[in-house]
Amino acid sequence: MLAAYFGLTYFGGEMGRKILYPIRLLVTFLHEFGHAVGAILTGGWVENVQINQDGSGWTRSANGNRAITIMGGYLGSAIFGNILFFIGAKLKWFVKPTLTLLALSMVFTGFYWHTSAFTTGMLMLFALVLLLITYKTSLGKAVLMFIGLASILFIIQDFNVGPSSDLAAYAEELVILPAVAWKYIWLFIVVVMSLFNLKMLLKSEKKEVSDFDLKKADWDM
Image 1 (cartoon, rainbow, N blue to C red):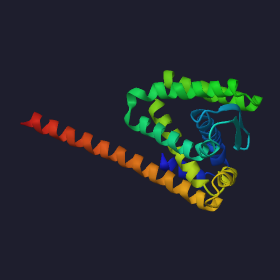
Image 2 (tube, rainbow, N blue to C red):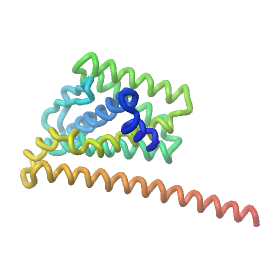
Image 3 (cartoon, rainbow, N blue to C red):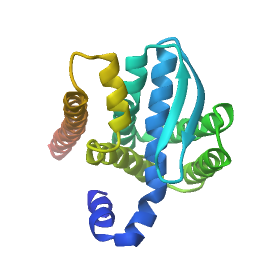
Image 4 (cartoon, rainbow, N blue to C red):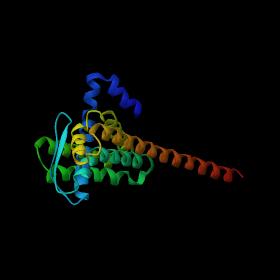
């Protein structure tokens, strides 16, 4: 997955950008959905969610904790990415429910927080593709892992550009540090979170291998 992603990103040229374009839109959705969740969890509500054709987006919300709502975009998409990757890698029984929930969240966003025909149409198409993959193929695990991995890598790569507006707004809320300081703090949190997730996956894999070796030894005896 890493080879495919970096190959398309750095050596794929125009074709690579076209192939990754839907993934870019999907990551933008996770980012904006993170803003929405941050607003709702802190007592606010969401009015609109917009995803633009160039891969950018915005979320309009009211009330709630503004600092958490702003932070929910960048850090929220990192949390979503790590959760999706972990489920795809280790929780095979939960892959279908997760992809179904992801598709339903797109349908809900597209209609309830509607802003444009492009946003709604794109989310409906994504939801339909995810549901077809989930219930008509055996690719759900790989797709979930790729979505999670792409989300993590996109936000790490774009930390210097992508969250600039969020950082400026966040620095206005928490004036104790400038935006450039928050940029590296957010990046540090995302990297540590992702490394911790990877450590858990490798630890779980090592335990499974050890348990298999023990069972095999018992069987041999």
